[in-house]
Length: 259
Image 1 (cartoon, rainbow, N blue to C red):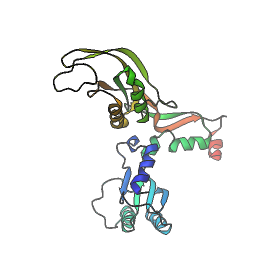
Image 2 (cartoon, helix red, strand yellow):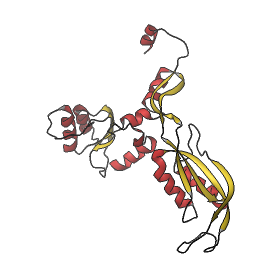
Image 3 (cartoon, rainbow, N blue to C red):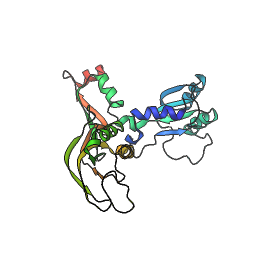
Image 4 (tube, rainbow, N blue to C red):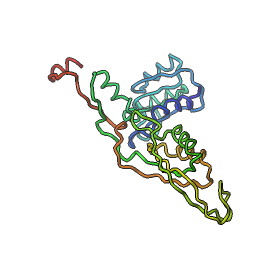
């Protein structure tokens, strides 16, 4: 397995587009095409961690915090950041950071802390808004299941703990093939009436490219009629922080002792 392939597996679970805009996540240094000899997971990829990776023959470090947070104007080993990065590069070790992509993930850092504390009724403290979209696409009836399946496989239709969520409305679509077209049905210069379904699904905006590509691949028409709509809904399954309830009330002192 290469570094790139390992990263691809990580990002299937924790997409980097979940990260905050100020963050610096992803592959910070290293050759993405290098074969992996071992992976070291850490909180901060400091110089001593790089040394540990060397001793354990690990050439990929997956770190929570990015060792490079803002731009490096030089790389001379004059501070702890440059020392760690230099040592990693000299020893052909890749460093990959996940940070707020994992913070914002529903099953990320804050979920783990709340589970450890035994909190009930957990909710996201700062849910993301404006990261959801709705796709509406018009499909001939005989192809509606094929298109829906393609959309679901591409990641559309996930709402909380449910997947393959959609809504369909039946109706009649019209179109007239013009010169230069290659219609799936109908004749040139004659208006065609087709029984169609409008399929509606919700998706996270960073999945749009793959979802539209899957839709077009499964759709029989050469010109697909569809629209994407930006939603203002809060995404209750994506965001920073988390809160919940203890089984029993406790004082501040009791809480500190519990922790």
